[in-house]
Image 1: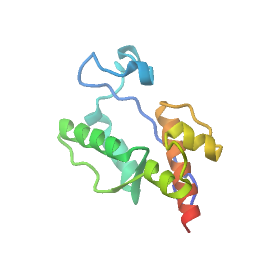
Image 2: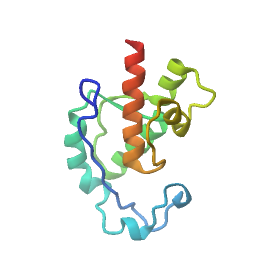
Image 3: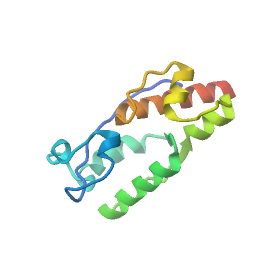
Length: 138
């Protein structure tokens, strides 16, 4: 995001360190989808360039995303980015006091299109929520 707008996008499937992984029922990804993708350590330099321009990172339930990023960095023996993480769950709760702060509920409230659990769609939704919440706070 730059000046209240989504300025760029980056998406990359990552091959996990083992063939069996969990949560296919959530995200729909299987080994066949990721087997030819780079491992985290191999794609990290490209992602790092993208992240280095950021002033902060934003995610829905940011504590979880931060822990996953830190675990991936540790496994690849690379330093995680030293950026603040801002949580759109907390932003939504503070700004709109909705009955549910789930990503689909916040997106419905704000009219943000969402293909839930598609990484790029979730990321764009979080960016749009942050833009709206920061605009409301200003």
